[in-house]
Length: 350
Figure 1 (spheres, rainbow, N blue to C red):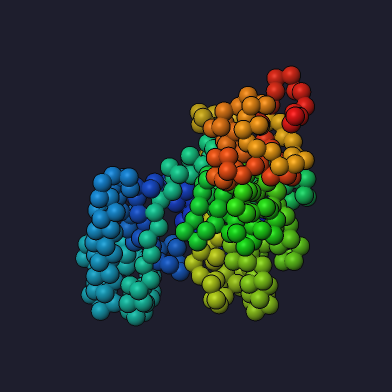
Figure 2: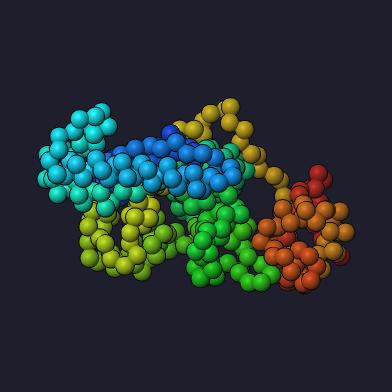
């Protein structure tokens, strides 16, 4: 069934293989220099220093630039007709079988750096153990493929606190604009940070994408690029394969073109590594939930349920600082989550 819903098209095989290597072979201490358009062309893998170390950005930038310069010099020599002499020159020349010399010059303008992710992916895999069972149930309840639970590996490495430079937040990386269509997002509550509510929102969005686009490769790409943009792309190119090969409009660039390939790679790596019993997967926590019928000060909830502020915040990550520090009450309608009682008694707010 997975193969039917999520086909591995011949045109993306090299891309999926590349992202599998990113997720399982190379760590964040390694940089992969490759061709932006042809991901089968990997020029070099650079060893980097720990990004948390002092002056790491400067050190790593120097190593990356030196490697790029070396590769550019090799491509320029090959483009001028100089035969390859060293092992590295012959290997790079072998990436361009029967190509015109001008191709080497074009390739020199097309080098991209990708940082490996294997250590982050494994950390995300461990974190995912807490959520997978319930997430599968959420998707299956909507009539959606359970394999969609692997998408957060691409979006956030299963980090519910993830926040991107463009303002996307949470495990599913919703922007405020898109998130407001499915969740409560304001100064008091941001449900993008609640893994379960955000997953319900992601299921709704993906279901709507699929209803309009009719294939999962298109629906998943629309999760990154936007549904309206994918509708236009389908109108121009007709199919996912046509879009992947030829579409180059607006913001449909490297990230959008590779999004479905990254999903397939993440799914394959997660399935392969997920069967390892030695991995210390996090376990789900039993919880009680109830919806507030009125605004309630946080101090009242803490006292009533004998829970620390730290634990309350951990179980309710959607609550913002004005609520957590007591400036504002927990708002009416909020779905409170607490550690499950041993007796299974129903929670009540006095």
